[in-house]
Length: 224
Ligand SMILES: Cc1cc2nc3c(=O)[nH]c(=O)nc-3n(C[C@H](O)[C@H](O)[C@H](O)COP(=O)(O)O)c2cc1C
View 1 (cartoon, rainbow, N blue to C red):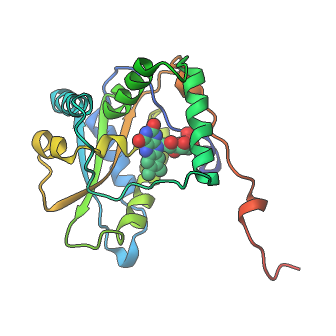
View 2 (cartoon, rainbow, N blue to C red):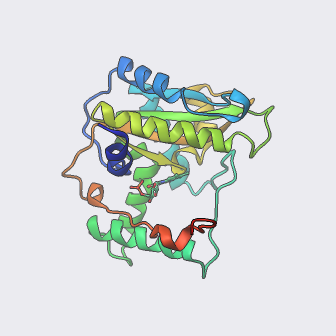
């Protein structure tokens, strides 16, 4: 798959086949991703790759806390969007599309809660990659580098027929990851990636997230 196809084909996958992903495949994806750029080649990323019983324990731990009403306490700052902004509008548009595909009426609190749970369960993917960084680094410094490595993971996954979903939801309860995945307090948990073979019959996988035309977001100077 060439680079243009890959960038266009990558999308968030929120429903997976149960087939396990071989460890060797995940290793190859991480090796590829480690070629991502980082400031002064600092490579501030660490990967904790979960599958099997450990991943099940993490899923259960997340869902238990979510359903007990325990407030999320992520290690990283989670973005919020001003109410009247285009950013909030885009979030609403995405949610509307997903809820429509999943047949979740706005007023159906139970179905909405079940949908929310899926994110905390890494969308039942057979594997999840947790990205963390050392706390000796500044809070925002490594984020650009980790963003680059994340995108490279998601693109590399396509080469192996895998889908992925980057998620904040999977990092909302660091205490669960520390307990079951043994991520120490000295590491700041930044993001999670659900990864596995896409179930193309799963309705939410048909989502087509929109993009702003480049003419609206690019300023061109000195071209004529
Ligand atoms: C930093 C980050 C956090 C995200 N967190 C979530 C999440 O918690 N749950 C989710 O369903 N999708 C999450 N996403 C996926 C975005 O919703 C998705 O990338 C966006 O809607 C664009 O759609 P696409 O990935 O299909 O192109 C996240 C993406 C990023 C980059």
